[in-house]
Image 1 (cartoon, helix red, strand yellow):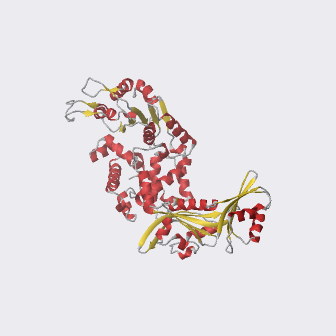
Image 2 (cartoon, rainbow, N blue to C red):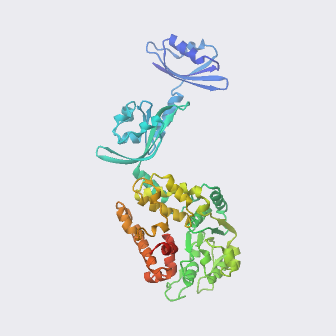
Image 3 (cartoon, rainbow, N blue to C red):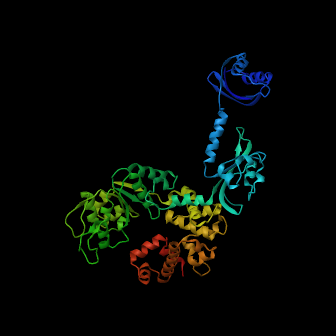
Length: 541
């Protein structure tokens, strides 16, 4: 019969030896024993068995009562080790990942519910057997017994005509003396990774400051300051070169503000003056030909209790600037063609990559508006001032590629990283994203080497022929184009047409006429695809 006991003694040397001797003399076997010392007491938890005779509680009490410094005995149902093991098992079995651990001899010590279901066996049937008794495609976990660590290894497993694609991580298990006593492998199914990553990477209104990547102090300072002022109603101005992430900051400020209204972005450079004013302020019924019959609500109205993000505000015409100034002063908007004013509660965040102070001195930007919007300026540093963030950004972009297109890149070679670090990054984070995606598709394997890292100027020509033919390029890259959505394929084709037109016409204005686009519309598309005319002209034909 088995007994589970909690023995309490005054703490002293030799208690465990005395208990073991006493139990052995009385014909008991010790199944397990654990000692917990607290202050001046020693609590000994033990499970004992005696198959020869059954002894009652009084008999066990008198058995230990003769020992020195004995205080009390209690019969318990669960030992501390059992309780920890049970909690550990519950945690493991409720994980969505498969978990297997082995000892130093390669024998399975743990297998959770998810892993057992994959092999269609119970954990009890598998524990204690060699890891090689499982029909795994590779036994990478055994390498960990020699000290190796394996991260994000893509594997395929076929069991009973069912195929599992998963990513596994294997690490050694060490004792307190740093000796390897086993290893553990954690596997996540590929579909689960894709679902998780898609839910994270999709552009949603709930963009937060945690989505902004950067560990350099200058970037952390900008994020901390933006977080501090986000809950207020104060007007914020974001300054920084193109591609630094100003709109990401604007979205995060809106999310952190707690405002229940909409987040409405407006590109001031993409709309003509008349259209910009009608979009921002709205218009009354019959205000102009071509307008909606019943008039239209402006964006400031639609964003009541929300945020309007005025991107490229330096490009706003002076007439529109005057109306914006009145809106900021009166907290009210007047639709075109109306005399009445509508009160609004809209937070305004502006952004520009230009020096507004210089534009004010040149008379190209209203001084009174400048002081009205420049209450809280936040300067977002260019990438060349925070190159320590490049590895983090690379990891993020490569992960997005893996999720979106299944392009699995493990790492960049030192020479490739050095080339990225030596670049001046005029296009900042947006340019880095484009360079990394291009390098990923130019790379044949899971590693990006320096030859695959090409900047815009280096893509302009190769052996006298253009290397901007993205459609042909992607078709040659193992059917990459077929993996894209219709929208993404159209984007690739549009980019190809724009670049060819710019190479032939040599100016944006002539190219816009050729493509039957407005000058601002073509500039916007060039910015979207990070196409620089100067580099095309100087390195092209």
